[in-house]
Image (cartoon, rainbow, N blue to C red; front, top):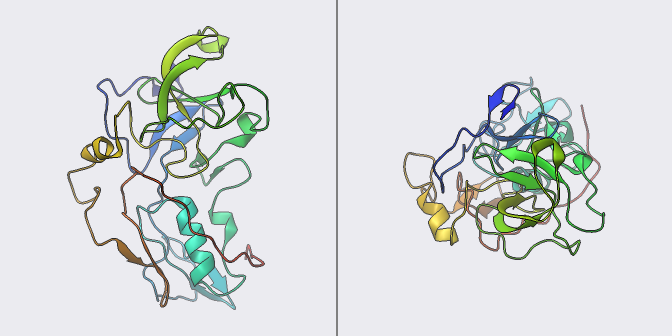
Length: 251
C-alpha cells in the first residue's frame, strides 16, 4: 500500500540490510521510523567551539560548545556517553529523543514510540507502524503483557498478532512481525528473519560502514571511551552504559 510519501513494500527480498541512516519504515501516523543510529555530533573527542555548527555540538557550558559522538552509535549509548564525558549539566537534551521516542525535522522515531500505544496495557501491544519490507511493528509486549524473549537480531519473530482493521489484519493471524525494544536496535536491526546475530552481520559486511570494520574502542571524550562496533545494528546482549544523571540544559 501507500503511506505518504512512500510505497510499501520497497524491500522485496529478505533477509536484507536496512538503511544505516534514514528511514526504515513509517508509523501509523505516517511519521518516519529510523534505525538506531545518528550521523554524529561534534567534530572530535576534544574539539570545542564558541558557536553552534553543523553537525551540532551536543554539549554547551558557559558559551563553549563541546561533546562528541561518532556516526554509527545508537542514540541511547551516545546520550549516555555524553553524560559521562561532557561538563556537568551541559548535555543538550533537545537534540535527543523526546517523550515519544522521536526528534528533529522532519520528525522521526529512533526509539520506543510510546505515544502511539500503551506500554503498560494488558495483552499484545498495538500496531505502531510498518517497515519498508511490508512487515508490521508492534509495541514492546506480547499477549502476556511482557516483552518477548525470542526476537531475532532484526527485532522480529513469528507469532499471532492482534487485529488492525485499517490495514486488513485479522486477529490471530500468524505472521513474522517486529516489536519495539527498550534497548538497541530499538525499532529495527535488519529486515528479517535471520537465524543468528552472525547472519545479521553478514548483511552488513561490505563498504566502509559495516560490522566489525574498526577497533572496538571508541574515544568519546578526553578521558572517556567505550567498546562499540560502529554502524553495526546487530546486537547480542548489549546494554546501554549507565550514565551520570545531572541537571541538563536546553541552552
